[in-house]
View 1 (cartoon, helix red, strand yellow):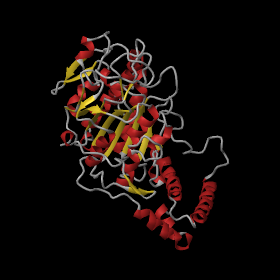
View 2 (tube, rainbow, N blue to C red; view 1 turned 180 degrees about the horizontal axis):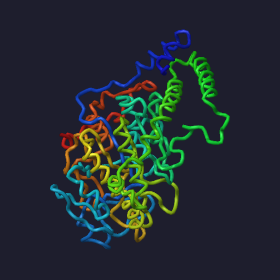
View 3 (cartoon, helix red, strand yellow; view 1 turned 60 degrees about the horizontal axis):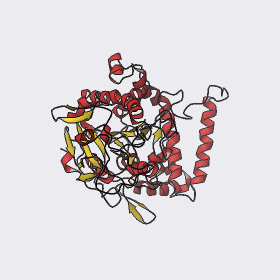
View 4 (cartoon, rainbow, N blue to C red; view 1 turned 180 degrees about the vertical axis):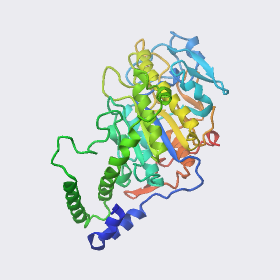
Length: 460
């Protein structure tokens, strides 16, 4: 019996009342013809530097080592402005579009004709936690649903044997805010993400009984589930509007399905040597992200709507994320090298399989970094201008939108906030962001809050 049948047939009619309430709260579905069905989001935790990756500024090379003077007082997160600091990497033009990309990303650079760059991103906080929340949920405060949860709420599943929303965290740890970044917030609890720790002995916690638990049998499982059904039915009485029971029932259902589907989707043994090499799995430094990007492709290929892949963990010093206050060349060098080939491999593989046409790949970070030095080798936080990019799913390739000033300090042309990117992403999925709402505490809430414009110049 599935969960809806269970709700309809249990609780002396209360199950039907609960089900009606839950179904009334479901998302509105498509508002127009979609260009995309799925999203893979790549999040650079710690703040990847735009002026060392995709925002080429000759002025930084010309004025290297001189006093930095943008013509206004600059207040930084944890330092005073240092001298003008050029990137430790050189720059080259790539593709038919002639996009400048730093030598940190030589493999990704070859894909620029498939990528749409947003060069004028801004955010409302220069602190990692609130800024990471904003890029994921549209708000700097906790308690709001992530973009993946909104997509789950709006569109539902393409494959009921797999979760709608899956997160593949960095194996070294979680980002600032932890799993709250992929929470369902006030949406029905079924829309929160399923966390999968790719490469670990137990990638999904508590999916299988431990080998030491010899006392667990099929018969015992069956009896336990029967008892659980009774407890859930009793708990539901008087709590018809509480979505946590629905989520609990759904989680047990999904766990049973994942016991069969997870080994197949997470097992990459059947992938060819050429595919493994494409993702960088033949090299130690790229093997982890290569595996997670490959699993990301396998997940969306099998019907997962939204996959989020994290690079960087909030675990102090020495740095294991993009927060390069002390030594940018070292930190960005290691993380960029680990990321470059897997991301390029993902784009190339999706394109070769015809999946890039209806899959959005979205690369972002919580804010940028300053064009001046912190100490002698690092860069401080910069919420005033940074870069994101999107590929596939109907986004135009080889285009750039907006611009920062001559220093890569501040967005001066067509400033963009996460609201606009989220509105555009939802638009490509067939959703009008102004109509995707959920009433919470008397307010019709949206992923885009009261903001957001579709960036028409980026979409076909």
